[in-house]
Image (tube, rainbow, N blue to C red):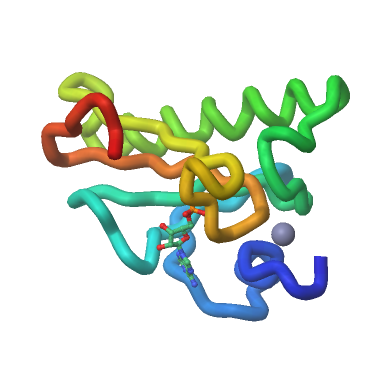
Length: 114
Ligand code: AMP
Ligand code: ZN
C-alpha cells in the first residue's frame, strides 16, 4: 500500500534495522524501544489490522507468531520470558495500520498492561 510506513520498510524505501527477512515476513528493530529487546515482525503483505484477517491468512498469522518466537529465542529470551503484543485499533493504541507483532523482552513485564 503506497502510503503505509511498514510497506515502505518492507520494500526498503525507508531505512530500518532489519534483523530477519523471509518470503512472508520481515522483522526490524522498533525505532522507540520500550524494553531492552523490542522488535517488530510484519507480514510482507499489507493487512491493516487483525480484524482484517481471513481464513486464507491462517498460515501467515501462524508464521508471524513462529518468527516472533524464533527471534525471541535467538536473543536468549525464551527461558526467562518475553511478550508478543498486537495492538488493534484505537483503544489498544495502534498507530501503524499494517499488522505487526511487537516482541518485547529483557525486563520484567507488568500485568495488566497499561
Ligand atoms: P503500534 O502502536 O502498535 O501501532 O506500534 C507501532 C510501532 O512502530 C511503535 O512501537 C513505533 O515506535 C514503531 N515505529 C514507528 N515508526 C517506525 C520506524 N520508522 N521504524 C521502526 N519502528 C517504527
Ligand atoms: Zn502496509
